[in-house]
Amino acid sequence: MIGYQYLLDQLRAEIATIPMVNTITQGALDDIDNYKQSIFPVVHLIVNSVSPSSNTLEFNISIVAMDVVDISKDETTDKFYGNDNEIYVLNTTLAILVRIIDVLRRGSLSDKNIELTGTAALEPFTERFENYLAGWTATVSILVPNEMSIC
Image 1: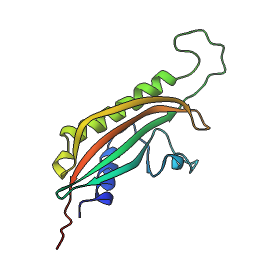
Image 2: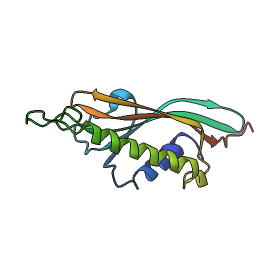
Image 3: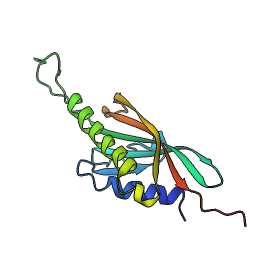
């Protein structure tokens, strides 16, 4: 049956093919990096809501791509880049999300009745959580067939 678990399984399988991603998790925002054993970069899936209709289920999902920012103990000599790799982390995690969105638009997931609707909104974050994670959150709407019948 196509539904919640099917969508998460298909997203997980597709994200696992991205060489830059080391860990895939799902759940609430509070569940991010709770295991303290995650190998970064991490992609975390959050299902925000589902809107059922007679023929489809529309999932509103946040896809969070993040990595740890390394801070050098050396004195800052470059004011643009600072003494950390935050810009590199933001660049890499953005590339991960763009790949996921492209696959939803026209890749193997569209062949499995998983369709991106509308445009994706991507928002960067820095200095989040206790271990200085940075990255991007993409909020997308995904349409899957509703195979539940009223009979």
